[in-house]
Length: 57
Image (cartoon, rainbow, N blue to C red):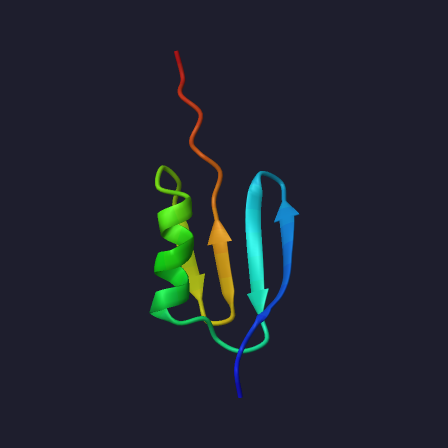
C-alpha cells in the first residue's frame, strides 16, 4: 500500500506533516532539502519542521 501525506498543519511556528503510513528516509531527506536552515525530525508517520532559533542580542 502506497503512503501519502494525509495533512500538513502548523502548530505554533512548526510545520507538521502526517502520513497515511510511516515516512521513510527518502521522504525525510526531501523535506530536509527544502528547509536547509531548520531542524527537521522524523517520527514514524510524522515529519516536523521546527522553527528557526531566534538570535539574541
